[in-house]
Length: 262
Image (cartoon, rainbow, N blue to C red; front, side, top):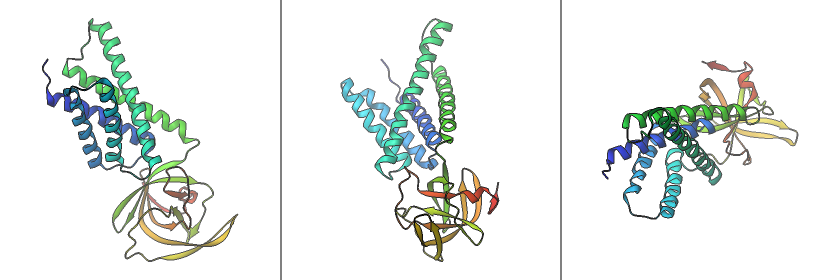
């Protein structure tokens, strides 16, 4: 049987591209297009495993390991929980996408055409397009179902013109303001280059006590495609644990106490 390497690569590349994009939508991950491209290429190259004479079990284990590496390449490694969350959704979406392709190929094509069309290149690309649509619809459905209980947002802050990709958590208890500007609270395990940034200390009060928090101002913050200007960022005195959230957003961002550009 002839095996066309370019065909194997591109099919696996597209399949993995769809999966990684689905993870980004479901989990609201910030990822660079370069990382997405290289991770999908890695997945495409992993498809060449079919050329080797290995047992089904070894093939399965290798695919699981390569899938783990693929999510690390795409989303980087922050901590084990963050990475395993990405990995679990890779497996879930793989099952969803694979099941959709199987249904379309075996059930639909045999019903309409009388036989499987998996050897037809154009048909495979059509299957992948339909699979992509199914994956995106599923991802958006999951997001809607999670939105009521988990208020997480893609957040980008710019420090010295360098974008820092974060996961923001909207906490209605964070009402801290300084000079009529909302203060966002950054976890203290996030490493930043604050060179040339003017550091100020802002007093705060909570039900558990009061104190001051180390802060600096950034010109631009983007939260789920909403652009805010001149926002203060406070560095948490203690490490907080809110799942994979990196920064606590401020309810006043959406209350008109800020400059927003849409």
